Image 1 (cartoon, rainbow, N blue to C red):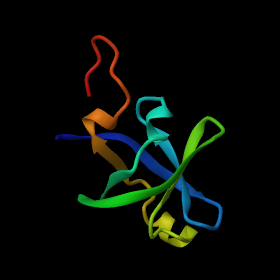
Image 2: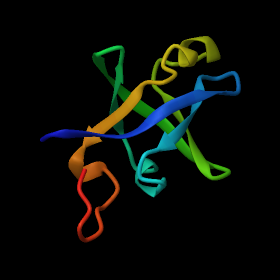
Image 3: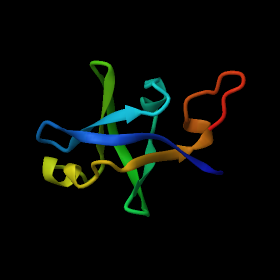
Image 4: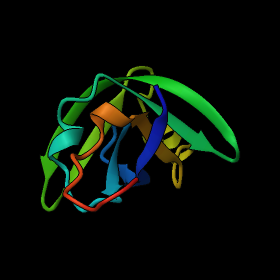
Length: 97
């Protein structure tokens, strides 16, 4: 299934490897159920397992398996977050990805 970009890694949060996410749709609910994602950074795609996603203010915080420090999380900053289209925010009538 085709993957679509749903957001971007913003910046780190805390000391355990969490990072803030900006949603391109403006909605965040669909992030809460993600089990895996792809991050595209500098033209390369890498798959990750999602360890935790939790609401934070008007955004979400995300933690990936194996990303356990702010330094490593910072290396993902500006990366695009991709998922299969069925996991992206539902489209309203007339909207397209």
